[in-house]
Image (cartoon, rainbow over all chains, first blue to last red; front, side, top):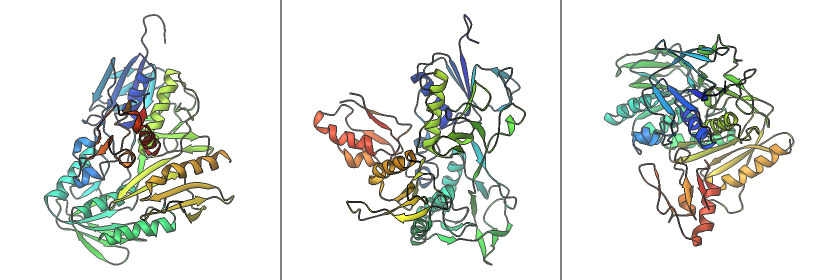
Length: 398
Length: 63
């Protein structure tokens, strides 16, 4: 495909953090071909972390979410268009306006979408929080009046939305099926501290609890929800954050291997295809340190993976991505940072630092060989560097 | 010493502000402001600390 007069063309599906990052990194890596970035929303590429935090509380303007990277020409950003089919053998994508677009390299950064609860279809009252439009809608609602919010799912999104709504003096009930808050990433000790923060700040936290019945007033105001603990709540608004699913349905008839995302190697290359790549929430990425494919849904990973794909396409760096998973959350003024990949079988131990920080507490998670494999720092971000070094060293010794 | 900040990586965690308050400032609008992008050598140590402490690796020193 690189005959005389043919300029290489990279098409990126998903004008997301990963998508824009990949485009900008391609240029930084010296790629001179044409880059086309396709987005199905009408907004310029933005990032999600501020949406449930500073944008929702109103502490930061909506523009805080907009990404600033510029991509040198030849570059085209096409918004409001969605890819509907991929013919990998012909190197052509079909779009929802019935046009098609050919490529030499294809990067999939088409992300994920919220998982839905059958009992709670989306409506004016029920919001599956994900996009900038969702954040603007909830922010407007929360700022124009004080009301009662039910948050379903105490993961990253749910816990942050609960915190942000409390900051705006809304009455907030946070419900989760599990017995602990953020149980996928926190051990018992860390969970209990975060739970305490929520309770101290007036969140009505209902754990080991689910929704047994919901009568939704689609226009708001008069919705009533029965919980499995026997109680009934009258609510004005419901936000659901129970996880996401990778956007891969449109790829079902392509030759790509799909399994909880697009299966890619440690350089972001799709299995069995040499010119298709994936990064970010849609990518099930092979991590040599863990010996398996993992789909991370965090800012840092999306950024790192997108840069790695760009280097792979440009041919400037073919070493596998070596990253220590990192994520963070802001809740009730606390900064919670997550390092490494936790596992329920690990032993949780409190981390002690030489210079005692007066606030906060941190925990390490140890495998059965006594190696620190993951950690959670609550209001102790000054120690992030040393904890990172410890975990990196124990991963190298595997 | 020339400082470069990758604003799309920056998440306003404000750790840089603790290390080098005369160089970095995260304001109430949630954005990081660079107060001087070419600070003197006397600030190198604190800027290097800011680079090392940044959780999202958003800061680099160009020379």
